[in-house]
Amino acid sequence: MSREPNKWWTLAAVCTAIFMLLLDITVVNVALPDIQSDLDSTFNDLQWVVDAYALTLAAFLLTMGSLADRVGRRLIFMLGLVVFCLSSIACGLAHTPLLLNLARGVQGIGGAMMFATSLALIAQAFTGRDRGTAFGAFGAVTGAAVAVGPLVGGAIVEAIGWEWIFFVNVPIGVFAIAITLRYVRESHDPRPGRLDIPGFATFSGGLFLLVFALVRGNTEGWGSPLIVGFLVGSVLLLLAFVAIELRAEHPMLELALFRNRSFAGAALVAFCISSSLFSMFLYLTLYVQNVLGYSPLEAGVRFLPITLMSFFVAPVAGRLSARVPVRLLLGTGMALVAAGLVLMRFVDPTSGWTALLAGFIVGGAGIGLTNPPLASTQVGVVDPRESGMASGIGNTFRQVGIATGIAAYGAFFEHEVRQKFLESFAANPLPDPPTGTKSGTISALIDSGALTSGRIREIAVEAEPGGPWADAARRQVIDMAHGAFTGALDELLLIAAAVAALGSLAGYMLVRQQDFVVPPDAAPDAAAP
Image 1 (tube, rainbow, N blue to C red):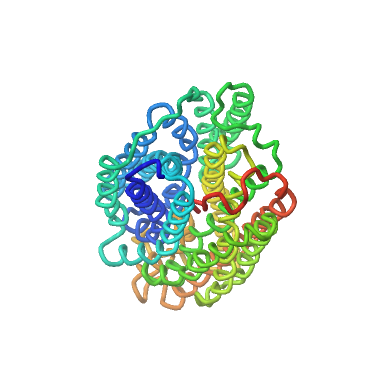
Image 2: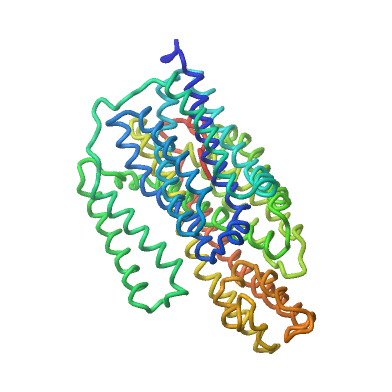
């Protein structure tokens, strides 16, 4: 006997909302070059398009779960849909990078409200075998959203413009809101804890200062008072957060869970998979579109191998969880992610996109092998009464991994591209670009961010034929810039592979089968990349 007569409508509402949310994450990647061109964005602006969303999602996720227990899970879920839809409109209407990134931050808040309540709404509506079926459908929908995201995003951007990757959320969101209002039952925790406001403030503040310092470090100078102050402030706030959580009666993040080595290992794997391959999507997208010159749709097609491999391998990994020690699945999956990143290396300005293909296939298989056992470990090694907190912590570590990974890689990448271009230019001196272009001097060209984003072609071709930059010289500058970009990308892929290898070690060495309270095959699939 089901708990809820409208249970399948509840599942439809949750799956629609999460499909929209995850689709919006993956479609943004292929839209970034068009956003950069239309809004005249810098490389730092592009980092914030992703990081603003990831930061607020990470910061609000656990707090929204606690708030939902108090005021109603259905209410918070529905408000999340409203916030997400309104902020999507604001994203599409944004005419400056600042407005877009502020709207993306608000989107992250709406996403946190939906994420924090989605599994709880399914759990309250289903029992017995139907619950397993519901969680399976939920996992399939999330996998499909990730798989089709690049292709859908490329088609939308190419056909009607990048703004519509945000506008398309509105009719989908309205549909989900209507179903929620009509069919989803409200529920509360009969004994909710207090909201951990000090924990929320110190965690979100510390994380923001850290990411801001990493994103702006090259521009402001790593020794500048602003960057040093932000880094010190970040450390102090995060230390204060730990102290608050250790003493809080109802902590936002239950640090005692990390005494369980399997839970700690799963959290580290979640962080590493997000801060390795998922964080690299930004830089790989810039390479495929701005350096190789593919359109958004063409780029989306070329990213399909990684998402499709993940989609098809994940169900196999879910079935293997009942037969194979989970640590082997986690460790091997992350090892494949590391191997995939290594296989993507050694690209150069003459490489075609197929130079990435082997890495995409192996990395995608690694994602698919890691995600289902990772989700089952996060909630399976804790008391079932703590599964909501455990799931929230897992998703928080994923988002923190993306936010810090993109910011840290960006700092390294920006520095390396600049240095490699200057070294190449010193060895092959050329006259400055003609007066009247967007970048009147070579130094201005570097400062424009065109090198880091791979957009050098757009600026270099502005020179009139026969001017100080003749065709041959202009071609040489483009080649030097692309050589600097691919050289830095090659080094960045190696760093990301090392991070994934660390996740592999965590999976192999920390996760133990005897720590499982719930069988590994009984937990829901992962909800997000």
